[in-house]
Image (tube, rainbow, N blue to C red; front, side, top):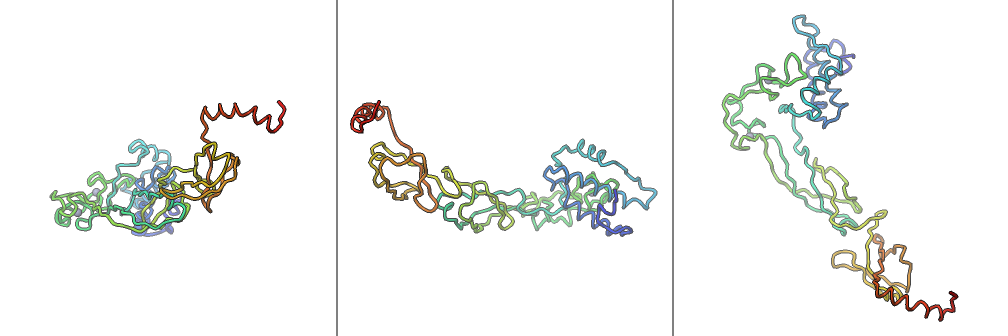
Length: 307
Ligand SMILES: [Zn+2]
Ligand SMILES: [Zn+2]
């Protein structure tokens, strides 16, 4: 493995450059960000190994850790499993809306016409007052970790978090909770944002607005075919045989007029507007069937049908 290539630095790069590049890459590939992506996690190990090698190559007193990728991965897996949790590197910036997914409820009308609606979202971010430490006056009550010099990584083997500070990069001297966030280190706030939903947005569609992930949730259960809404309408046998005008309920309290000729084809769908199709279900009961059976010989006689 070419360690310089892995880190993307020129051969002969200074320790400061290597370090800067390493932290940049570690942020991108850190298991906390990998979401169980094995390829990303493996690459993170390569980055760690390259960094470890390049930082220690000129120092004969420092132990050079040479592990194969598989060995490193096995170690990694043994310690943390595939969940990749437990790193908790607070000195990596947190996205304010990470893991947030807000539902956008869409009615039939909104589905067919599109909509613009306000959605209240809650956001969490690091408390500014205590810089996310949860400690009151953290300049006074915390100290930069001497073991890792604030990096949060084990200085000899930067694949692991610093034992002394558990990856935080500082140690708490006096545990006085921050007044602003009550010691949580995070602030949750609510805000309303205006969401534009285009017409015919599908159930489960995901989009990002203002850094927040939204998911479309249809509040109706109608079938949809090629972007057209399918409405089911029960029709009585007399109405079907004779035809006429009927009102088809489409939205809550809203109906569209449908004019039919008698005995129309019940196996097809009928367009009642640009985006609504109606399928008819014949309401027929045993009494109707008995009548039809009785009528059968009469029809045969009228239309001179042979048996
Ligand atoms: Zn430390
Ligand atoms: Zn705070």
